[in-house]
Amino acid sequence: MTDVLNSARNFMQALPHSRALGMQIVEIGNGRATVTMPWDARFVGDPVTGVIHGGAVSALMDTASGAAVMCHPAGPQGTATLGLRIDYMRPATTGETITARAECYHVTRSVAFVRVTATDEDALRPVAMATGTFTLEGVAP
Amino acid sequence: MNRTPPEPVHIIKERREAVLKALVGGVPYIGFLGVQFDRRGDELTAVLPFRDDLIGNPLLPALHGGATAAFLEVTAIIVLSWSLLWDNMEKGNGPPLDPANLPRLPKTIDFTIDYLRTGLPRDAYARARVNRSGRRYASVHVEAWQDNHTRPFAQASGHFLLTGRDD
Image 1 (cartoon, rainbow over the protein chains, first blue to last red):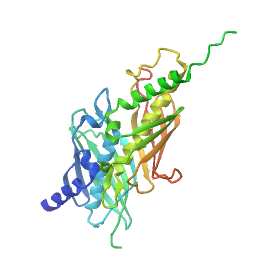
Image 2: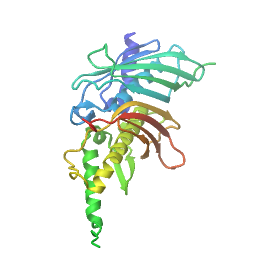
Image 3: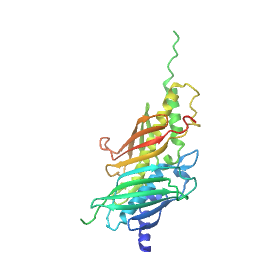
């Protein structure tokens, strides 16, 4: 399991845009992934409140979703986002790390279905939720 | 008949550029992504110059889906804000727009992205269309392309909450 987490962390370090946004995988396996993104002044979308831009939250949720697909037991060799539908429920609290928890809950031979929730340090009130569809490459029929 | 002469074109252009610059420059994340806006009259084209740290899959290589999503969302928000400021900026009725003190940006309620093709490691462009803009809510569609405008690589639509318009 530690090996899996280590290779997942290396994988994340190899994704330049995820690395640029300071993302870290904290948990991964069996079609589920948890990825964090610390608050950073450069990612602010509303200069008045210091709230993180929705686009950065989208990038975090997309990354967590892709990681969840890649660790699904079907063992895909690759994946790409087909569609992502995001609901923004409330602004993330300024200064707090955002955590995205993604679950790949169904796969066919060619498509993976994912749901993902983003929270700040108040884990009971989600900041955003999304559902996504992803391509599945290299899965034996 | 006393007609006010039309404003000199350079004054109009300077005012528009100042408002656009303030709108875009006020958002740190737009600077982080490196998105710029080209203006022709009221039409805006967002430009995302390629950089290595926009890559998601280094093997292909392809733009990160999250970078594409963010580019589309930034474009939608700026184009929507710009359309809301336009009348006030042009008619000059009421107090003139102060670039240092612009109204609050719209808030994203939901955003749905279709990835149509792999984003290539080169510059990307996007334009947004405000399909409906009411008192509280707006609906915006946005499309992004790279080399060929007729071959978009991603599109999105979203709903936005217009804040600070009646409070």
